[in-house]
Image 1 (cartoon, rainbow, N blue to C red):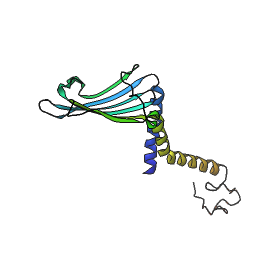
Image 2: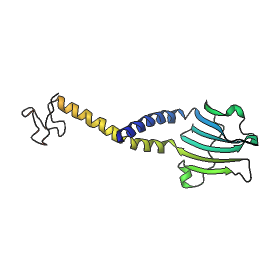
Image 3: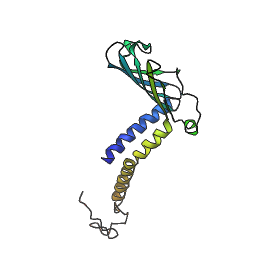
Image 4: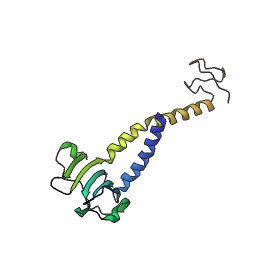
Length: 180
């Protein structure tokens, strides 16, 4: 299970690293819009994930159909890549916001026909987390390679002791050789 999670984290790490480099020039965005309540007016919800200039942006926008934000052609999934972003992060005020972590909400059902919750997370933070999660897989690959190199050289795969004189069992660590 740990190696599966590590393998998945490594795959996400590579994909996010490519997205991070790409975000210097191109803004990538995925949006899903759905009707969450029918009626007059219908209630819609839009989930958005965006990568722009080293920052990941996640948001949930809940609004009335007649708010004028989206029309019915926006229902479903949309993937857009653009060279010029139309929205940037809000002004940064606190220390945590200067590091790239911004979260909050706008609007509200009592005053506006929409409500917007958002989160900005820098790519570097997610890359550190994914790199840490993929460490067990990287260590396993490293150990397996080292054991193969040692066995090919006539050394004990576990401790590296020269086993050419005692091929059946390592006198150093007690490892029993398995027939190939």
